[in-house]
Each structure stands twice: as C-alpha cells, then as structure tokens.
Length: 89
Image (cartoon, rainbow, N blue to C red; front, side, top):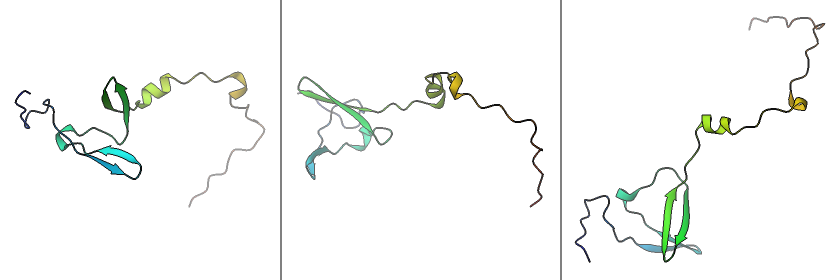
C-alpha cells in the first residue's frame, strides 16, 4: 500500500462507519467536507460514490420554464374602473 499523507487533500483516508437508527453512516473527515446539505450516492461496482447535489441557479431555472399558454395570460383590465385612491398612512 502506498504511503498515505494526511495533509494531502487528494490522498485516500480511512473513515469510520457507524449506525444511525436503521441506516449505516460514514463519518467524513473535515478535509473531505462537501458543500450543501444533500448528496447523491450511487454504486460503481464495489465502490460507493458520494457527490454533492448541484443546485441550479435562478437563470438556469428560468431558462427551463415553458412559455405561458394563451389561457394562462393575464385578463384584460376594465378601463371603466376609477383609479385607486392614494392613502397617506
């Protein structure tokens, strides 16, 4: 086995497994800390891969929205209504 240095962030480290109710959990060392509070976990053969969930930013979310349909448009405004009265509070 190669000589593992703990100060090298890319070097493998041993971590502790423990039980949390009916789930198995792993204590991740601080130098392997992941951003956020959610992860994606999947198997690759005999390995488990843990990746942070990539959250979309507002522009990405807006770009995925479908245009409004004609029935979703705002209704016409009744021009015969009096303008709202301004109130000083």
